[in-house]
Length: 133
Image 1 (cartoon, rainbow, N blue to C red):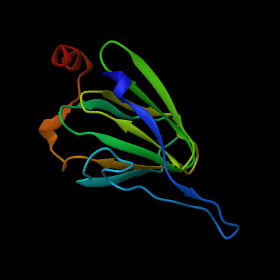
Image 2: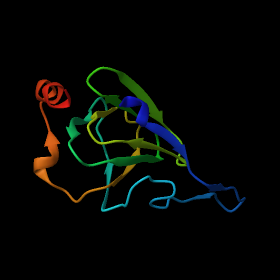
Image 3: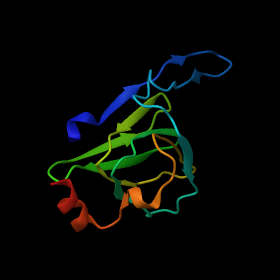
Image 4: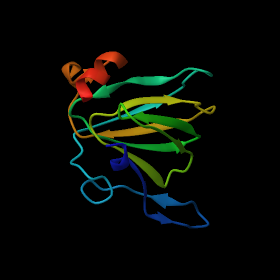
């Protein structure tokens, strides 16, 4: 399942006045976007995430700065370093996700396939390993 996760390059238009990139649902993001949120002002050494979603899919972009996204499907683990605003990481449902190594002033944009639902989360890794089997 971890093979479904992938970095997707977004369009970029280079201009001396400033560059422009964009993202469109069902074109660059392989799902309909139901929610968006952003993570910022993460203190040094802190991690975010540490959970899995049963149904939600995500598309994560480092709009500013850099951070690592660690994905785990219960069998394999991959680390994706995001540090360019024209790359996004597609995270399929059923993946344990953690974000770490946030640089100063980093800004993570997360596009989600579902509305927020506390019942969609798995917060315990051992429970996740049982669920994924």
